[in-house]
Image: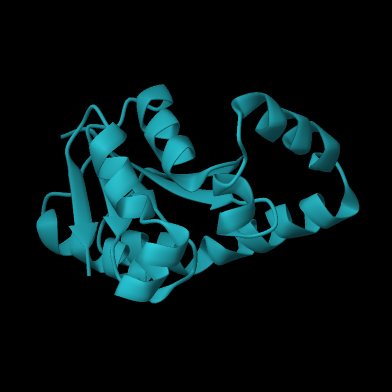
Length: 153
């Protein structure tokens, strides 16, 4: 395996993704890891409730470049520090970071394709109520990905 995409958002599930990836590749890390963070628009339900891709594109265009969006990107960049350090402590030398905006599941699947990932690692720690109310990103990624998806707890 040459490229692994690890979805992170600073949550307990993100930490599980990172630790699981390190355990899975103990002593033989993949040549490249892509840490991906997806910025949603107004919370998960706001983006997932969009009725069309055109509406989402319009929202993306309206928000991109605003001071608020730039602040969110800066916060996401800072959030990458701990996962990057953890990977590097365990011998991972080629760790890239990517920030995308939109529907989390769609962006994870698309980023995996664009970056040539051969495995996607996503957290799966949300409660049943959260999954029922907001949807389950991990499940959507598993259904939509063309490569194996590892659900980490």
